Length: 136
Image 1 (spheres, rainbow, N blue to C red):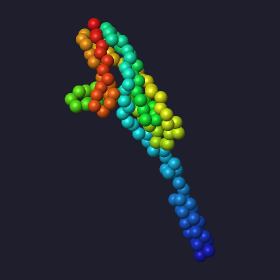
Image 2 (cartoon, one colour):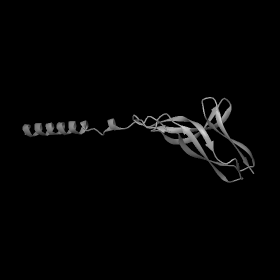
Image 3 (cartoon, one colour):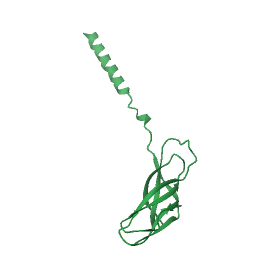
Image 4 (cartoon, rainbow, N blue to C red):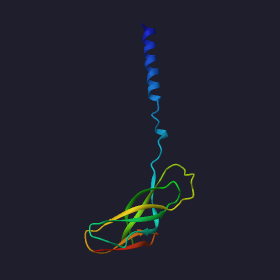
């Protein structure tokens, strides 16, 4: 009976160690991508539009490396002036494609009122690139 009890304890101990030592591969998780503001070099689009019409503007921006992808457009303030900025997403892995090409995204603008509006995108740490649009 002692032999059976000892064998049972050893089997339970062995199974416990084996079960606890199994890895769930948390070490292989890739870190989350990082986001960073990209500087805009050009805004192309119509200079006039109608109330309630959606206008599309091609926004060209530069990124740090060729692996970057468009993430979003967000608001930014330089001094007391408000405008927009392009946010690029960079993968956490090392990028082997180091020479970046300028990238493009589309910004949609729609006004519910008549007037002259300025679409401002961050082109440097201290200034905006501005596109004026007149809505009739």
